[in-house]
Length: 186
Image (tube, rainbow, N blue to C red):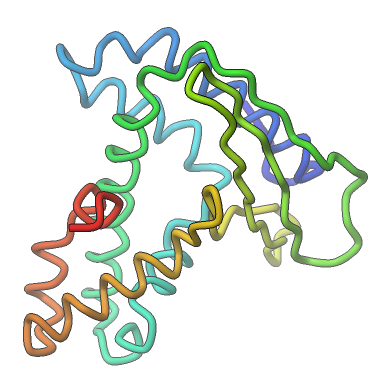
């Protein structure tokens, strides 16, 4: 298991390796037992992704207007749907060549971008992970930029649009949230 307290470059390399192993061993269960596969992916991501921080960021200024229960419900919904969307999206990626392109020593600051190249038969994908060091000294992933698309900003815009479309009814937005729709641009 990857430790979130370690060097952030090594952490991303370790998580990538763990995810590739899960894809190779559990990806075949996507159709027969998707929850087993999603749970395996979630177990790899849980120690290193700050889902609550990301969900608050996606809610943007609406997070301040939401009750603690609404924020918790959205964080749970967001995590479940994001993990499932991600897991489905990478289910066929078992034969990827994944490489951190700027490995270095542990930064002295509390924020770092880790760049990664993912090579497949379809070509090259560039990924930038933003990590912050929390109060416990653990590095946590808070954003991903995939081929120049800032996923945090994309989801935040989608949340704001959904709030407008639902006349500011946050419960309706949470109930209707689907990361799959947001990634696909629906």
